[in-house]
Length: 374
Image 1 (tube, one colour):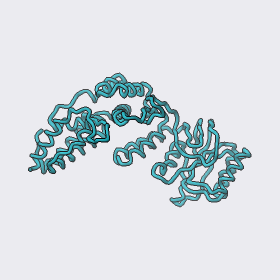
Image 2: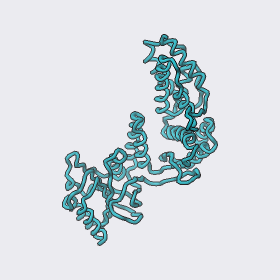
Image 3: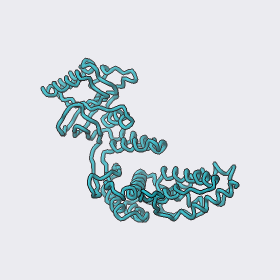
């Protein structure tokens, strides 16, 4: 079978399945449903040449989809010689976005959740999918940067109007390493959030005793060395404007300058998290934009980077749905809807242009060995 023949079979196979909006998994113990691109990815042609060509075409479709939601299907329509839908590029107002969401044929619950989240959202909001804590679906609005880290001391949930932030990427063994910091905090009477990889029992006990005496107010939080938390210190430093003291880079903990500590406003502390606002929104936005770029380039890290982006969003809207038999079906629709809304807010939603770009790239890479019908 020639490349031309196998590619034409791929074209026919995609055309036959392109209009399938929903299908069931081919598994006896699963009732999960798949949307259009997921359905196409499940196709398994018998001929080896056709299978390889199909995988190549679909890889372009999924790359296009990752780059701009809904452009994956548009790429396949171009591949099959169909005319693209028009009007996507002109989407600007919330009313237009709502009409666009309505055109995708989502389940009514999903459509309503997406519309409600859009009505709550501002230009700086970020929308996320989350499993509900009950059997109901609901929206959750979270204000302030939020970090899930464990306190090294037992504390009561409290709100502090202003506190300093010290970011130390290392383990503090001796009190002498932070003596100058503790002296500064004792003199100024300013509370301090201390991020560390760990504290010795001696250091931890010193902090507890002085906190109880109210000579200082230091709240130590531990960041682990696992992938989920490895960059949390950098994220908190960006939010608070702090310098990071990194022992792995040869910095001495004693070199920390108390005058250059970061700062958070109206911070809420709990034993398992802290959240607050700051005056460094422009720096945070640049940092988030870089994380979004990395997420697109490294899809295998998308879950970890998504959690970081969520922590760095000053206003988050969580779409919460129950983890029941419909979760996979609903979550795939919500995920697509969130990506559409987010890309529109970031002025990057132009699926027609994106599909054309990937289609041109596909043609260029294959024209030397394959000729196919336009």
